Length: 489
Image 1 (cartoon, rainbow, N blue to C red):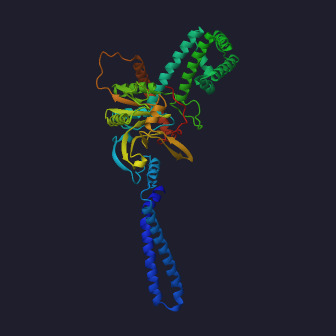
Image 2: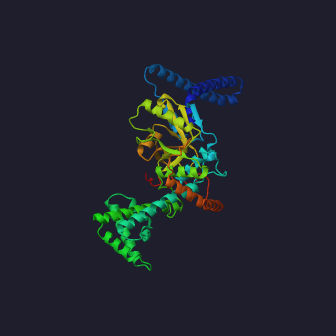
């Protein structure tokens, strides 16, 4: 509709001229007929000729008035909102499925060949697993579905193993501060979702709530048929009765770390329902560090080759290309050029950690727009939800669009990177040479060994999910933007 209005506005002067000419011709033709018709029909023809003459006079008057105004105000700035209209149309056509609006021309673009064949569909909010699998498939030119291609279940197995190891370490450290032989029964006190969420919160209110919930769970366990060990029960009661003491604070801190690990495993297992009511696995606990380890482990597992994962772009100085609000126009142009080079590299893949989501970056484009709309727009091709590369994100310059009757701020790439230190563009690149002097990473080695053990189980799980229809089309169960919890750094 907006495009039609814009075209109509461009053609309005021509339409007025045509309308005026047609009206005058109709009047002349009516007069000719009037002279040849009999007296019975002359009245009807006279009325039609009068109507046409009035319409032609009105059109000529409108054109004349427009010319007078143009001549009179030729020195004043012309109020032309076509640039703003073009900008609004461009905002609405940020999807890769839409063509460019009138007035916008393509300067240059790049898109990785056959990128869609390497993408891994999500089942629920598991973007940190699907994006890693897709990046490695793209890196090693292995289309999804082929033998040797990575699946999101492989990445989920890595994450579960990593957080299971963290839970074991937290349990061991809790046993030391409690001075008991085994602290495993404490896990039963932290199975409730409210307890784990309270452990992740900050402030005195959350801390007090966590102590109350653990105390209630402890008394309930003590009254059960299989109560905890009396030594462990007494030690926990002493701590929870006086949480303000320094020694008690250390134990409560260990309990919180154990609860956080339990929360992560519960999310990865899909133990608790999502806000939508569905019970699905989620990668909400996964941050950039865990994602990096998963990339390296899966590369060794699938290809027996190493990859390097670096923070390519972000707000922190440790990033290869730091982004700041104080960057000059020249600096931003250089950053954009570096980003284009990284996207085009055949030996690398980019994973964008934007708000509550991980997705690949597979293309870029530069557009020429009217000066009032910015003159030029630079965009990357990625996915705001799911993994299908369907959204063009502006490199700079936020804008507000309307979605479901509400104004939604679409943040640019630069704004997203500066919003939170965890928002980064991660570069996954092949390692051309590995020195024999480099010591093997024991954690990486243990993860690869675990993947070999569970590989058959992962294949069976995927077969069962496909048979039950649980693996749906891309984005079928993707959460709405902003509905996931913020992942830990």
